[in-house]
Image 1 (spheres, rainbow, N blue to C red):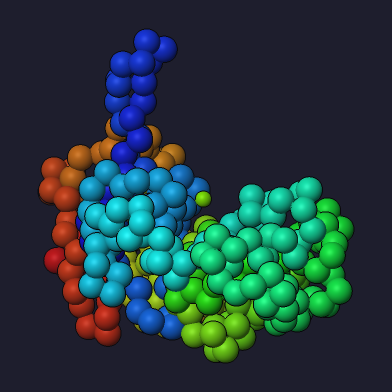
Image 2 (cartoon, rainbow, N blue to C red; image 1 turned 45 degrees about the horizontal axis):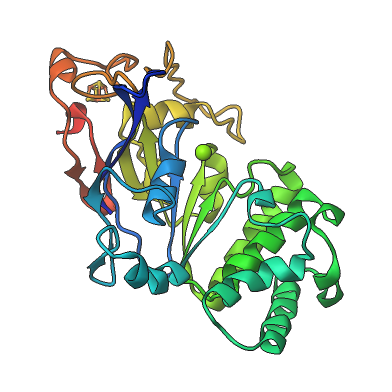
Length: 314
Ligand code: SF4
Ligand code: MG
C-alpha cells in the first residue's frame, strides 16, 4: 500500500462541498505473506478507514495497493471479484456480517455461495468443519446469532471469513468489544488458524498491548499517517517516535521498580478537517522544534526494519 489517502467531503445542507475530513492522509506499508501487521492508534486516526479502503468498501482518494503485482484500486468490478475472495474482513462487532434472521450456517456459507464455490452439500460440510476449527460444534450450524456470546460470534465471523480460504484477513478491532479473558482466547485462535491456513493479518486495534501479542510488525498511526513502523520487539525496545513513546509509557509494566520514562502528551488530537502544517504531531509533541511546524518529516528507513517519520531521527 503506497501513499494511500482517503478524504471524505463535507457538504452543507445545499450539497456544496465545504471541506474534507482527511481520514487517511499518508499511509504506506507492506504486508507480507503469512505475517501479522498490527496497526495501532487512537480512535479516529484512520486505521479502520485504511482497512476498509484496501477492500474497497470505500474507494480511496489516491494511492496504490499492489496485490500480486496488480493495483487493486484500478481493477474493474469483475477483475476485482477474485481478489476480493482472497481478502476478507472481520469486524469489532460481528453483527455486521451475521444476519440475525438466518441460521449461522447460512452466514458462513454465504461468501462461498457468492464466489460460486462448491455444491450446497459441500458448502454445508465445509461450514460445519469451520465451526469445529473455530472451537464450536458442528450442530451449532442450525442456531441463530443471538444464541451466542460476543466471543462465540467473533469465532463465527472468523469461520465466515475463512470459508473462502483468503490470503489476507483484515481484522478491525476484532477483540475490542470482548472481555479480557475472551480476548486472549480469540487472539490465540487467530494465531492457531494462521499456522494452519497461512493467511496474513492486518490487525487493527487501539490498544498496543493487544497488537503486541499477535503482531510480527507494528505500524503506529496518528491523524491519518503512519508515523512509525517496526518489528514488534524492535518497536518495544527502541521506540523512536515521540507519539509511540507516549503510547508505550502509558502501558503499565510488570516490575514497578524498573524506572520508566513517562511521556504525557497534552491537548486533544486536532481535527482531521484541519490538519496541522508540517509534522501532524507538532501541536502536541514535547520535542517539537521550529522546523516541525512547517516541514513534514519524511519516513526514514533505519536499522532492523525500523521506519520513522520524525525530524529528531532524520
Ligand atoms: Fe515531534 Fe518534530 Fe518529531 Fe514531529 S517531527 S514528532 S513535532 S520532534
Ligand atoms: Mg475503528
